[in-house]
Length: 130
Image (cartoon, rainbow, N blue to C red):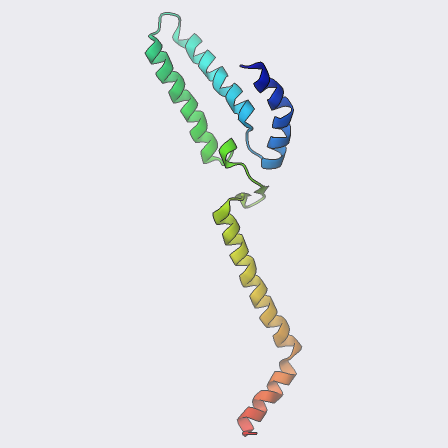
């Protein structure tokens, strides 16, 4: 675990986690370093270095996969909204399209209520042939 990762995770990392709701990159690196140390210790001093490297890589990959599945990986950082999750481009497009549909329906209803008498008279005139 490096000294700079510790400092950054306790300073800039706090703001990163507060804004994005994701694990910050410095805390993730600390976790990966802890996994590497624990795996090396668990396999013992007589373990083959290639096996140790494979086990460490597999354990660190599991951490990355878990964080990506839960939208908490630093690479997926963005604004997190309740009931929506992390806003990425496809979700933003979906939200904007939904908002436009709701707005269009609202405008039609608003002007329909506002001008229903005028529209009714004009349709009666058209039916009468004037």
